Amino acid sequence: MLARLKGPRRGGLLVLALVIALLPLVLPNRFYFDVAILIGINAIAVVGLNLLIGYAGQISLGHAGFYGIGAYAVAVLPAELGIPSWLAFLIGVAFVALLAFVVGRPILRLKGHYLAVATLGMGILIFMVVTNESQWTGGPDGMPVARLTLFGFRVSGVQTWYWITGAALLLGVWFALNLIDSPSGRALRALHDSEVAAQVAGIDVASYKLFAFVVSAIYACVAGSISAFYTGFVTPDGAGFLHSIEMVSMVVLGGMASTFGGIVGAALLTALPQFLTVFQEYEHALLGLVIMLCMIFLRRGILPSLAAVLLRGAGQGGRA
Amino acid sequence: MSHLQVENLSIAFGGVHAIEDLSFDIQAATIHSIIGPNGAGKTTLFNLITGLYRPSAGRIRFEEEDVTGKPPHLLAARGMSRTFQNLQIFFRMTALENVMVGRHLQEPKNPVAHVLRLPSLRRSETACRERARELLDFVGLSAYAADSAGSMPYGALKRLEIARALAAEPKMLLLDEPAAGCNPAETREIDDLIQKIAERGVTVVLVEHDMHLVMNISNHILVLDYGRKLAEGTAAEVRANPEVIAAYLGAQGQEEFDRARG
Ligand SMILES: Nc1ncnc2c1ncn2[C@@H]1O[C@H](COP(=O)(O)OP(=O)(O)OP(=O)(O)O)[C@@H](O)[C@H]1O
Ligand SMILES: [Mg+2]
Image (cartoon, rainbow over all chains, first blue to last red; front, side, top):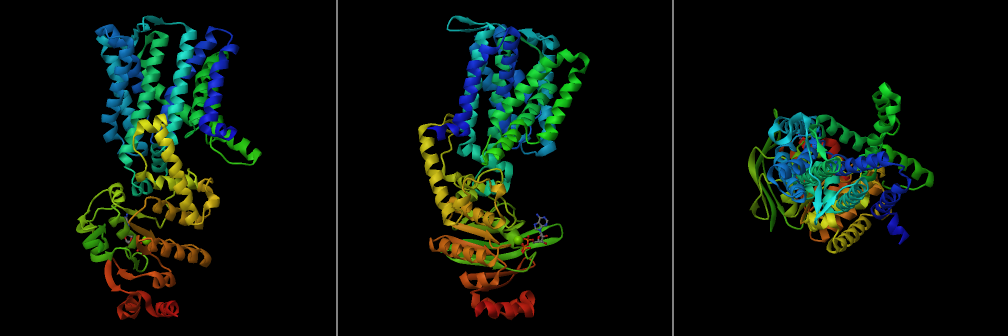
């Protein structure tokens, strides 16, 4: 039993569940709850993006676009077409999956820098649409989001959204861990290391890349929807280039090919700016410094690097 | 039965005719070796047969069916598997996982079952892991099962590639210099391994520079030179072919051949 809990799937999931369950006991006020929820939302997107970048080895600098579509779906559809919020959420997910499938097919033939620029273009395109279609989206000023109602209850309050975000993150992590340790996940990790060897083993490399792209887009979309519901307002920034870069930074900083590392990265890069505000004009400079130092001294990402150090001490190998 | 037929196959890179107007047959359940000096086109031929390269002319028939230009993963699904001269290992995965990837075609494909880890998947995963362990055992790598492939020594990785290729349960296995860079003891182990694989009824296509190994285990040998067929036949026939001796092996090669015979 203990041995089964030690595996990354059960053990890590249990730790994450405990952290989510116990955190409210130490969060002193609303501000901290707010930060925790933002961390959770970013973590959901990052767990998905890690499947694409960390595991399958394919870069995307446009995932904020999918996040933005998730956010605007639950804002625009109820406001303009009177569609119930929960249905708008599902439509958003379905639309993002379809869009990622259609766009991913030609884009994912590209590799490395070319793929980075192509996904960047895709993200910018989505951002421009969201910004320019102001009769629907409110343009650069954004628009309010109707409260989510489920079974006749209005979902509101920072506590409620804390638990919803926590549950969604747990579910997302569980799905991701299952996937990574399945034939599909092995196919993704294999094509990351050697595309020819993967092909020769019978893996349809193009299809599996596309699969990772679609799945990671859905994660970003869900995160975007939750964020819109929680804050009650959407702006184009969520779909913007900087947000894409932030998400990629969270993956790389926390640990590529480490699901829990990605969460650590999301936590750090979400929380740090909030607490560095005491340094006023030096806030951004300090944030940059922290990121640089992490990458120099913890090259493989925070969690994998620290895990390696700890395991070396314990004298055994393992995966974070 | 003819397992693989190559007809008038050609491919060129820039001005280099890596394979030119090459035709030959490979009989099922035999060990078929392809030899030739460096740059003769052996690896290129493997890349053509397994679909990594498209020929500029010619046909490839696998089990009587035209498979010219088919992508590698579909050829794998038809029962073709291979190893690589320059190692193509999944370095970030464990040895066991490397072999499990080899079983990709045998595993269930439904991604929903993968994401939810349904009981059916849990069962197939246990079976997959079990089979992969057996294969690691078969190539003598049980001790490395849980190790990251990135930390394994070169000789072990050569055998890991064989285990991964076998995991697909291929009908034809193409081995590109499986003993290259291995010491004599390791080479003998690989020699044994190839014979065991052939005994199971798998057609083995072997590219190897170790003449002793080639002469001992091959049913049929094809000699390439500058992308063309120089000679073919049994070990004895190839050994006696004056053209082979002159063009490819030279005086020194003659000695090597004689040693291999003796
Ligand atoms: N992808 C490629 N691009 C350009 N030239 C290539 C390519 N692949 C092979 N060649 C050329 O084709 C010729 C045959 O190469 P190949 O690797 O098939 O030889 P080989 O018989 O496997 O040699 P070795 O015994 O050294 O492995 C060489 O001249 C090589 O430079
Ligand atoms: Mg070669």
